[in-house]
Image (cartoon, rainbow, N blue to C red):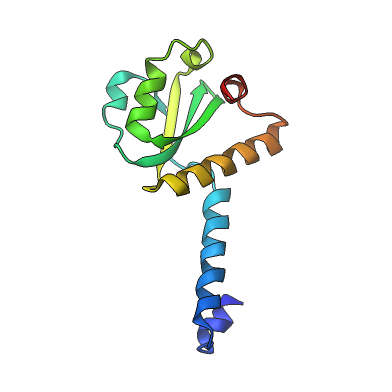
Length: 129
C-alpha cells in the first residue's frame, strides 16, 4: 500500500507519512533487543552511554527485569541496589533509543511480548511493580 502511494505520487502525503510512522512504531516495538549480553559488572557499565533506551537484566539465560530510562544511570542504580531479586542479575543488554517517549513505548512492548510468551512478567518486574 505504501509503495503504491509513493509510486503514484499520492496527493495526500500526510496520510502516507502517518501510515509510515505507524508501521515504523509497530516494527520497532515488536523487535527484541538485538544487542549481545554483557556481564553485569561495574567495569562493563562504565562503557554504557548516558542516553535514553531500554534494557534487560538476566540471571544467566533468564530475563528477570525489563526497564527503560537513561541507560548508564538506570543500570548503575540497579547494580548498586540491595533488592534481592535484582542482585541475581548476571548479564544485561540494552538498546539506545534517544527519546524518553520511545523507550517507554518499547519497554511496554517488550513487557507485553514477554507476558504473551511466558504468561507472566519477568520475576523482578512483578516484584517491583
